[in-house]
Amino acid sequence: MGTRRESREWVVQILFNIDVNPGELDVIFKHFWAERQAEPSSRQFTESTVRGVVEKKSEIDEIIKKYAKHWDIKRMGIIERNTMRMAIYEMSYVKEVPPVVSINEAIDIAKYFSNTEAGRFVNGILDRFRKDLTRPARKADPAKTAGQ
Image (cartoon, rainbow, N blue to C red; front, top):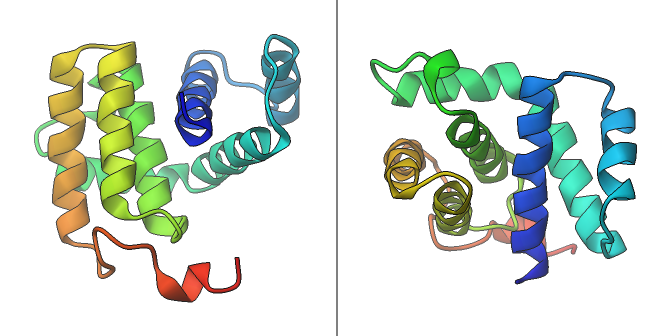
């Protein structure tokens, strides 16, 4: 399993936990990391993504509502909802990751933690969002990756 894939799975697990049992992020991270070992870069990617999703949650949820016509976000599965939150955050704010990578990872994670139908549902919404992005779908944003 790739480091980024594992980190994304951790992101979804932590976001799931926050959805079910809200709390202070630092406490949630402390308990989460006590149960697993992670490379510093994986841990940093995971925490940065979770913090970003939490910070932008209202904005991200509005995007999900816009593209998930006739679906109430609270009635969506917790895995699907949080997988989409992670992917939309990545596509919007993590410019070194091409949008299609975020979508493919989200589909695989939704199928892994839920089922095949969850993957289709997530794909449909994220692909509609991707079509409205102003950046290339298959390339990282060169302006964001040049200094990294």
